[in-house]
Image (tube, rainbow, N blue to C red; front, side, top):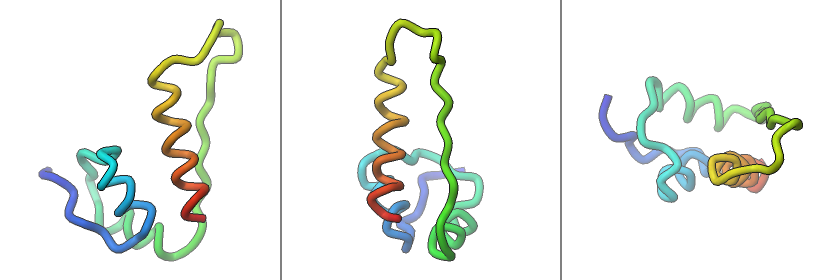
Length: 70
């Protein structure tokens, strides 16, 4: 697997440009799924933890990017 080629779907293109995507096993399949329609995304946070951390911020940024692109 090498670097992800530049995709057509707006979300995947922006996520790749921002450095969120390093490798993908099936970039063409993911690109096609993103262009077909809406996807469901979920992130589960530990509600017993004292606070969120930097890793949580990256996940939230990706969810926000998904929201931006519909």
